[in-house]
Length: 304
Ligand code: PMV
Image (cartoon, protein in one colour):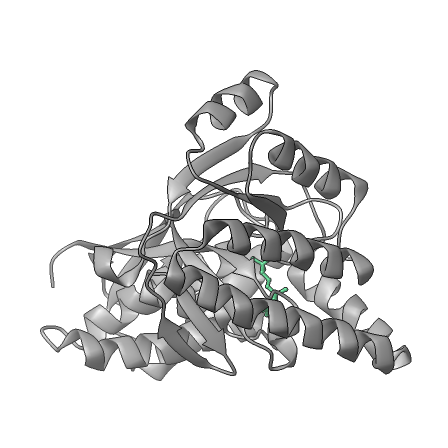
């Protein structure tokens, strides 16, 4: 085989993070930023561990890659990763790594095969890697990364969503945060201790996600933004936000966002997402204030 490159996009969850772990739906979209897996023919199947990873992260990546490679008979390739996405920041970086590696392995193991065939195998490998990174992920991150579009996700099933108007977002980075696994584990403990109100909050998030699907398909951005605001409030009620995140959420709203919320696991840092009709002016202002942010138009199925 020749040299090749596989891309695993990062993702943004518009609504439904955390509740999605308990079987409620979520709406997520792939980002234009992500992780590239550069593939070269080699004597044996191997991954070059990036030098910036600590010992624990290196061991996890090695273990995750080995397990995925075993699924497809260890094709003789060498994989080198290049990350063009903020890592461990709520934008699905581990899923982007998993997807890039899984695509690289699947393309090497099934050369010339139809996309549908190797995509199925890549999904299996990406999930296998995500389990090494996160324990018991909902699957929304790697599924969004593999589909590379806006989608509805519930209990492992994904449906691409179309929106008749452009969906423009602005993402503001909020610095270091705890791992997804530990934020999810802490919420699980609180839910076990106080199941009643947690279930009510999850149900309400589920309802917001359902209404958001209708809003997206109708192109009703005002309603979608409102539902994102409500979703942030519900995540906040579950202690998943922080002063740092909520300050940024309010800043995005003041800068003209139709709605804004934390995205991903939340906690101390990570990322917040705002929905904008036109994010360019806000982007300029926020960057001038020193905030680390970027904007993009979300890819929906008709754009692929
Ligand atoms: O913060 P991230 O990018 O790892 O996203 C986590 C999303 C959760 O819903 C909190 C966990 C999951 O498995 O879906």
